[in-house]
Image (tube, rainbow, N blue to C red):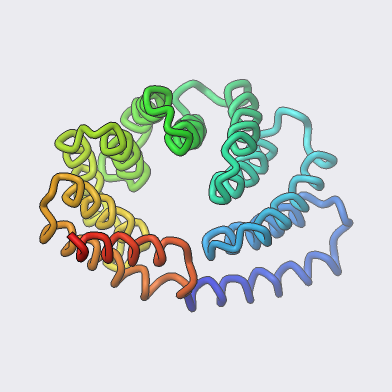
Length: 252
């Protein structure tokens, strides 16, 4: 949590300087608004995040040509917040606007395009359209395999996403296979208390729970919670969700 409040403090100081020295539609101001928005998004304060990302977008629309990649980033930021809020049709609308720009602006195997496929796949997963989700996640993963080194965290996220779809479809052995591939990369690539590791432990715990292996489930979920309590604000939705899962396993 300390990291987020510190980040916010520095971004806000930096923003004050920009506001005092730059014209009101300067692109650097938009970047600054986006930085602040991203911190609020990570803290789970979605209304604040949306407010800052929309301020950034307003500037970008005036300052940039219509197919500029930074405009796509701006659409993605807003889409991401709507996704977090559970407003999936809105999220899809913004992610697709971003994707349209990126398809025109980038070569076909660019990692940003993979991110974009990934975002769209995520919304379909949240909407329980698993075949669509798998289709977009696999497109994303194909690009990552070509464009990134084998132990890159983005490849791990990609494996994790595919695993999640299989989990939701009830194919638990497939889910575990992909979650474990993801976890192996995270363990090699990230510091031990990284939030992505917590998500990974939580994912594996959930599959074991679904498979009826409750002692393994509890062990992985508790590892997830330990990291989350060190790195996230106490009211964060991820912490609440992990505690809910742990309580459900204990009831069995």
